[in-house]
Image (tube, rainbow, N blue to C red):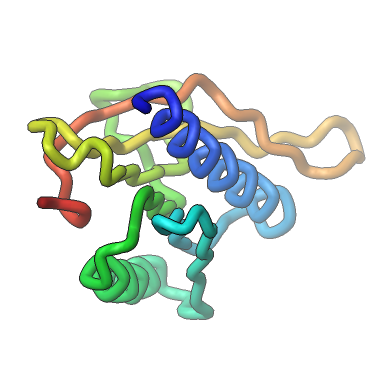
Length: 148
């Protein structure tokens, strides 16, 4: 069962990174977004048009809290474009921060993770902008949303 749970979380994380990467290539930034996997195995995507990142994030947290109360959220990833704290990385400060929580981990003391994915915006000559992703950094902490 743990392997299936890991695969579900990995799949959602992969989708979130891909979505952030595509937005970065188009706009050089991305707005916060929320991806949920519900108990029925359906993926739910939540975004908004609020330009201020902190305000947008707060609205997504409200949405998340409402969905958590319904009791059917299996995996959640809340993504934001951020500067990675210096104690984790010095060379590439820009990062995609993915806040991951899973129902299967709720009983554990360290049941949530921030996954920081450092990135660089690059261009080869006159070509299109592309995003170079670096090795992710995982930071564990007690869950904030999916708690029992």
